[in-house]
Image (cartoon, rainbow, N blue to C red; front, side):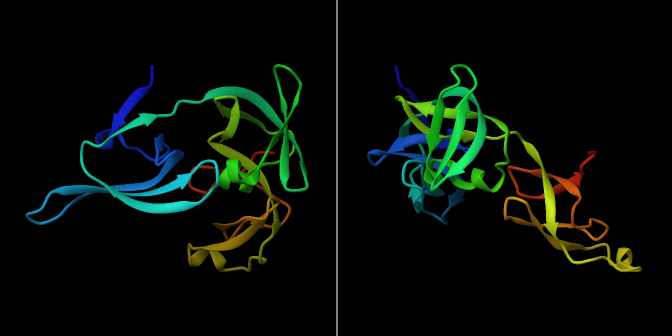
Length: 190
């Protein structure tokens, strides 16, 4: 039996069936318009194609919620355009397209354990840990007196993403990054 949700149940990350596709909520906002009715404005990402759209829904509209089965897996390597994981239960190789991974590709490092999300025998995406430890590949050097500003500086990490780190972080160090926000959390204790 399918689980039904309506616009009052929306949250970032909710996946539901709409327009013959499976969509994930990236952003949403309940908006009251003057004397008119309210609407729920959303930014949605098609889980299968990776395309994004903005759409407004009327309060109370109902949708079929998509609930994934999860398989524990470990990231092995990138092969051409696909990312290859090992199913930790069966030791089978699982190939996942970048579209299904979305922003998760920014945080994947060798041997990282994740959960692969499966729906109707099809891989739909991955669930990352809440934070990951990544190596700082390149960041400007810090100078005496930099700490006065209290700001940060850009740092390119081993996966290619750039985050803002405190001025005392140097190239070659490891930092902890929040996979939900993409923000620096702390210096890693490695």
